[in-house]
Image (cartoon, rainbow, N blue to C red; front, side, top):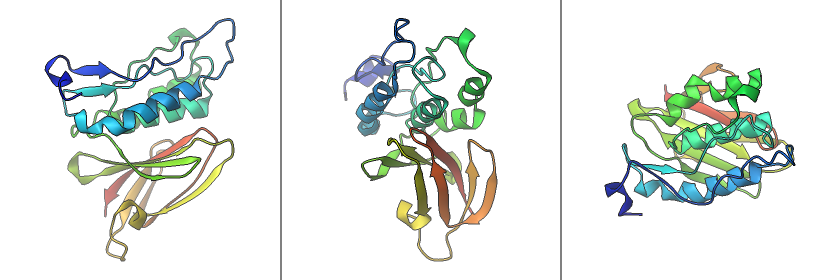
Amino acid sequence: LDWVRGYGQLWREGSDIMTFDPKHPDASRFHSVLWNYAYNLPLGRFQTPGNWDDPDFIIGGDGGMSLAETRSQLALWSMMSAPLILSSDVTKLSPAALRILGNRELIRIDQDPLGRMATLVRRTPTMDVLLKPLAGGDYAVAVLDRGPAPLAVELPLSSLGFAADNACSMSVRNLWTHATASRQRLLKVRVAPHDTAIWRLHPA
């Protein structure tokens, strides 16, 4: 992909996101989202502002995608600074799906001027933890639950590479609830199956 910057501002790679099948309207499509996420995530070295890896359309809120899965796709695409091109049937989006897809704080993470893709800092059979540097010295952190059961997650800031002593604390904003807590040294959350928790961290 070193050559591709000279030919366009974004490039599609991986497989096509699974299209909606009206004969099977409830068939899950989340596995397709996860496949494209997994393919795209290691390609951050080819991405710079003005040149974007494109893991395909946003299908959140459409048939075959739960609200938790809708949150996950928007959060993961935003952590990867991926183009946010909506392919869902807008006329059929629920108010809850519209609130997710129109979350301005998530969109700001996606369109952060640094244009950096998140780094995978931890992985288990059911969980990914992503860290993304943002302009101005902030960070975004996301926790994906790929599994069928809820995850109780505790992430000390030291596990993300920050200093382990009391000198390091963060102002932490939950980008789904819009709640902010000051001087935190631990991220603690319960993540529902197929959902993704996401925060914006500001060094205190």
